[in-house]
Image 1 (tube, rainbow, N blue to C red):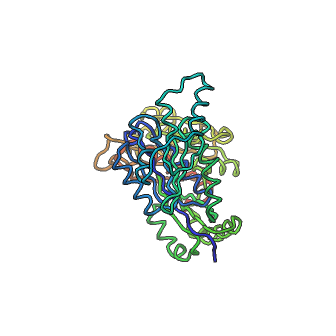
Image 2: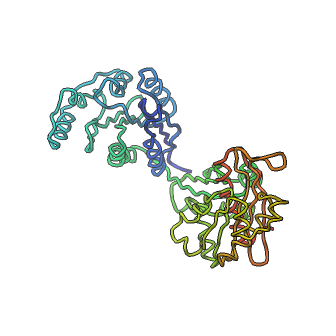
Image 3: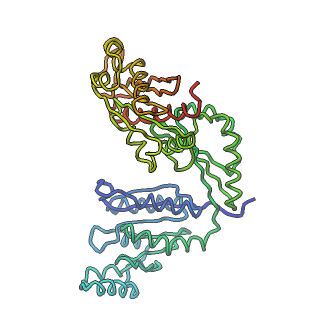
Length: 421
């Protein structure tokens, strides 16, 4: 039986510049991560412009579902900065001069040899019911409220100022006020299977998960992440509980698992090549060097990556890679026979253990009835064996290139691990 309660937070980012896309809201992302670390669950992130009704509505909505409301932005001294006066209005109080805040602003300007103007002095006028939180890196103070059974914290939108306030003031205060759960995450990385198929494979396991462990499906390009999140009072116990569940599900989906947590597919490929003492070479056509970029983005890739060619036109597939001219004429560049020869010849040309190849119609033009846009053939050649696969992708060029990259790396993984049957 646990003796903690779930504490929920909402983040409100304020400013027209966020809605216009002129500034990216990295603050909310960072705050979410920091709250997760201490066991506070962020239930919503809201972005509103510099508009009275929108901001007041966001306050009311957040109060209905969160224990902690964390706000960034709108704290400047100009007329378009509405957060302070609207907080005062929402809580039914006045803006008053905080002498401590005024001295902090005065000191800030004096240290920089600048004059403290009447407009700057307005930074020291705060809602009378707030607790003043000093901002050591700027002029807009933090404001802590304990109102309506909720914690409210307003902070400047400048990232480094906000981060210091969260780290030095918000987190210590939250920890002192609430009995927080420990939260433990582990992510299973899968590739080569769609979300619905994966869910079907593990549905019985998912139903039997303990109540304190939750599962989330996080799909991305050609991949699906399974995030297990455990809530409890002891990190080691939570980690052990999650590992037990992973050991139960692994036999069901082991073919598709390439790594855990933050590991990228290209990192997993590098790890496999090193552990098996294998070297790889690559002949890219439709992917245009993208797969080589993925492989070489990993430090130490020179230990296993021999090199690559991009024979984009047929005559170079023939001239450099010795792809048979008859094959190109009769079967076409986008064919199983062509990628087989490309992968085998690149393997020999670069003295590699494995040769990879891609050839397809990335789009948006170039397709026809038999081979529509998104048709891609890939291959992996090994000693005595070449494995091929046909992909039917999308109408989007860049998406097709990226999906081809994932598919080629996954084919390489399966070949190294002997899972191509």
